[in-house]
Every structure is written in structure tokens, then in C-alpha cells.
Amino acid sequence: MSMSECVDNTHFDFSHNCDICHGPLQKDEDDVVILYNRRFPTGAWKSARAVFRLSGVLYQGDRICPCPRGRGTRIPGCAIVHDYCFKLFSPNEPSKETLGHLGRYLTWSKIYLVRHGERQPPLVIPDQLGFPSAALEKAGDEVGIPLKMLPPEITIAIQGYSQDAPFWCLTRALALSFEYSAVLSDTKLVTVPLTNVHSWRRGDASPKLGNKEQELPAIIRVTLDSRGVSQIERLSEHPLPFSSRNTSGTKQYIVADESGFTRIKTHFQGGLSWLWCPTNHPGLQIWDTPTPPLTVLVDEPGSPKKSKPGDPEEFTLDQCASSINSPSYFRFKTVDLSTATGLTFFYSEAGNVMFAIHVHTRSLPLAHLCRYHAKDRLDNIIYVPLPPGDEIEWLAVRESFDHRPYRYVGGPSFMLQTKLSGTVHVGLVKRRSVRTTAFSRDPKVLIRGGPDHQYRRLFSLFPRSDSDIPQEAYMPINVRGDLTTGRDYMFWSWAPLDNVKSAEVFHDDEEHFKGLLLTYNNGGQRAVGECRLGVDASKPWTKPSRLHVAKWNADGHFGAGHPVRGKFHLKMEFGDEPSAIEGSETGRSEVPTIGRLARLNTEAESMMPIDGIWEPVSEGPAQRC
Image 1 (cartoon, one colour):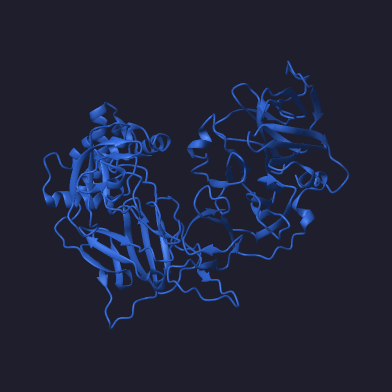
Image 2: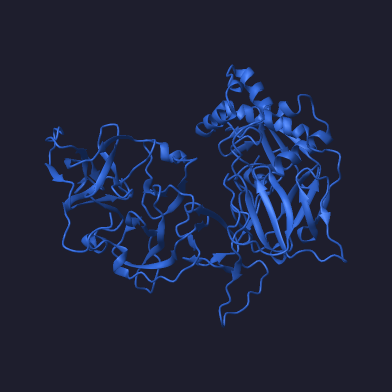
């Protein structure tokens, strides 16, 4: 088929993964099944077999084309599955009714919202860990893995570390086939505006609707999960912010006044529901908590009213301190600071994007992001411990601007002060003008909004506080100059070396220093460099009295053959006896762990030490630890 014929076809949105088992579709796989509906969601469903390519599916019959090209926006209404997964649901040639039931079941789980007049890719919401015992038993029998004999908690833990393994894809397909058999299939399609719905829960044949005599509560809450719309309900008033938490991370929520859902249609059939958001809608705000803060429209005096109904509007979050205003469409992720035993911040390779935060808790002490566990990953990982008895007293979001005026020029950094460990800096050190864009004393929740890897994202703190912390208090007096004289795109960390109760040194496979975790006599902890708990090897010391540090020049080049300057490898030990570190090319130092200061600067793109100083504390106020 020629290019001109291709672009005139109906183009569908498609995935590179099977819509049943979520396993990858292999290149040149000639046994995939397409289920499609050209008048989705109300038309008739059809199926075809095709060959999968990395650029799409090699099939252009019936005037459809699941490839990346095509005029206009690709539309939903298409599922692509492995042939063997398809046969789990329909071992024989399916009837029109069965095909429609299966197509609806697979595609109504995908939620397409809009942003700035463009339809976004489907929301990705993770599945809840764990499978029905029947699916787990059948999958285990087929491949000879008797996981059914293990307690469910152990099985879930194994799944958490290997979710992409083929065994779990098989188990997921079997579990979905069992769930599918229980879904209603003989109900008629009902299509109504979302603003007419009083309540609905997955499995209900039809929604409960309002009537003219009954005034519906003004607030609508829509609950979403990996299977699509789970529940629609009405609330008499906007919930108290963060009064309820979603700890599993497997649900998302849209909570707004009914005016925010104008022009959105809901379809109901077979115990399922699907939202249709038109492209002229300004967008919806999606949260990972059922009780988000109220969003208030920003009313700028003298600004003209927007003429188009689909134009994005800007909002601010009530009772929150925010770095920027929120647009109409945003996806928010929240960090519950009240239960945290530590925080791990994930920065991009260049350090200008903070794309994830892991909250360490007693039940989840280790970060599970896949790149956290990769030995060759290029991300920068910063750990802030919050041991028992410690808590965050204040937290500030800081951003760099130049003088044209206040043009944003880099990623965010954070300053926080804890009860036991003092002031901690997270993020890049910049020489440009830095100002505080959000501040909270006794913060409960840290909010970040926007697509992952977006250059500038919203960071908000709940509750909002006026910053009464003087600028010079953002850094310890002994190293205050480092944040203004250091190089751009540097990560900077420090810790006092007195009153140390124990130390843990993290290193790579060649025993090169990566990070230092110190525990003090008062129970506080500080991290220097990069500490990946449960991933990198480490050596512990108790009651250390002397620190031994040795340097190695790093091999490598920068740019067109220019030698790397300033980079080095470190090896570190604690002990009373002379150091056993051998082979140092640039010298070693041995300092007592009394009245000393440890500081380490690392380059963003390599997380390799640029310079490290283990120096006497200068005259000034005593450190908090």
C-alpha cells in the first residue's frame, strides 16, 4: 500500500505490548490478533491477524492502519494481543457478540484524557500485586513452578522484584480470563453525560442517574485503576485535604466540581464504564489520593477572558505553597512525609530534571524503581535518611533564575532541616540566582505534578507557610561559600565528623567509594555522596575514631580528546590502625573524626567525585549533630 493510501486510512492508537498479558510483542512476530472498532465505542467489532513490526502492525486491510503515521490524531478502539493469549479468551472462532464483549473489555480499560487540545496516551496505572490463587496455581502447573505452596506475602514479594518475567505475564493472562468470564455481557449500551450520573461501581449493569426533582451533590469523584473506571460517586463537599491516603499506588482519582466535567460522556455496558473526553475540553487533574486539595482558578486582574472553551486555565492549590501554578491538565503524585523513614530523590543524568521520589517506610524500606537497581544506570540518586525520632522541621523548594528577569534556567533543589540532623541540601549547586519558590514549616505532604521528565515541574508543599528562615540559614556557616563559588551542575553534600556513633561506606564492585552514611550519638543520620540501600555493597564501622581516604585519578576524556580534570576515585575506611589502602596515586589522608567536616562535590553527568574535603571545622556556631 502506498503512503498516500496509508494516511487516508483510519489510524488507531496501539501499544508495543500485548493488551492481555502486558508482555512485549516481538519484532516480526507473525501471530498477533487485532481487535478494532472503526466507530468506537458504539460500532461493531472486528478482528484480523497481522505481523508485528517495531514501527507498528503490518496490516492495512478494511481501510485501517495501526502504524505511527496518518493525518490527525490516532483514535482509541484497538487492542493488539498474542494469538495464544487471544485463545485463552476465545479458543474457537468468536461470534460477533463474543468479539464485541472481548474488544470492549480490553479497550475500555484505557483512559484517554486531553491536554492543550491534544489527546494524551492512555494513563498508565500499575496493577495491584498479587493474583487469584486459581490463576497462580494453573500458571505454576503449566511451567512447573509451584508458587501455590508459598504464603501469599512471599509470592507478592517475588512478583515485586520480577514483574516483567514471562511467568507473571502468563499468570496475568490467566487471571484476566477468569475475571472476563464473570463480567456481564448481555446488557445494552448506555451513554450519558457524566454530570447526570449520581453513582456507579464496576459490576453495576447501569448507573444511578439524577432527576429533575433531585439536586445532585456538586462534587464528583471518579476512581481509576488499571482496568479503567472503577467508581463514580458524588460528594456533598470537597474532602478535607489528605484526610485519606492511597498507600497502594494502584488507584488514581479525579475530584472536581461538576462544572469541570462538562462535555464529558460516560458509556456503560457489561458492568464496565468508559470516559470520553473531547479534544475541546481544557483537561482534568489526576491525583493519587482520594482527598486532594481544592484547586482554585487563578484570577489575574486585567487579564482578558479566554474565548475558546478548550483553552487551558491555570489553577493554584488551596492551602499549599507551590513553585508554579497548575494548568488544567496535570497528573499529581504525593509524598507522605508523616510516615517516611527516608527519601530517595531520582535526578536525570544531567541533573536538571527530578523525575521520581521514593518514600522509604517500615513496610517498604528499599526503593524499587528499576533504574535504582541497575548497576550501569546514569541517573543521580540522593538519599535523605529519617531515622526513628527524627522529623522534618521545615522544607523549601529552591530554583535558579537568571536576570532577564527571573527566567528559569535549571532543575529544582531542596533544602530541609530535620530535628536531629540539621540542614540538608538535595539537588544541583548553581552559581546563578537562587530563590525559594515554596516553603512549609512542619510539612506533611510534598506534591509534584506534570509528566515525568518534564524540564520544569510543579512542586508544592502542604500546608503552606511563610518563609521566616533567613537566606544564610540555608547552608551551614562552615561551607557557606561552596554553594556560590562551586561549578554549575554539581551535586553537593556534607556531614560533620564529630559525635559519630557508626558509619557505613557504600562502594562499587571495585571498592571505589560511592557514599557515606553516618549515624550520630543523638540518633540522627546524614548521607554524603550516593547511598543505595540494599543495592550497593557496604562496610559498617562502629565508634569510628579515624577516617582514611585515598584518591585515584580517573581515566577518561572529555569532548575532543581533552583530559578529564579533577575527577578521581576514592577509597575510604575507618579505624584506629594505619590505613591498609594501597596503590593511591594522588595521596591519602587520615583525619580524626573529631571537629571535622566531610564534604563531597560530584558531577551531575557521572556522579563521580570532583573534589572531596575532609577538613577541620572553621570557627563558628557548633553543628547540630
